[in-house]
Length: 69
Image (cartoon, rainbow, N blue to C red; front, side):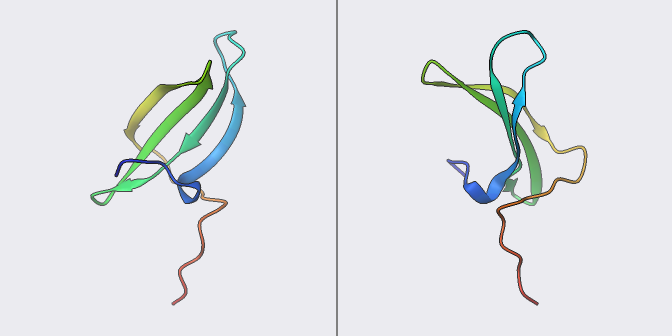
């Protein structure tokens, strides 16, 4: 895994809670059978990662195509 995909998107943009004017985006890609929670923002052309850990709750993927049975 080297990049986030649109299908990994979960929610955002969310307002920051530190008073900085950043918009946070949540992604939850699956890696080796584990769903990861990644919270990132863009600032001055750079990507800032605020959280990166195993997802603690079930996430929803608004752009992930349903797998047909």
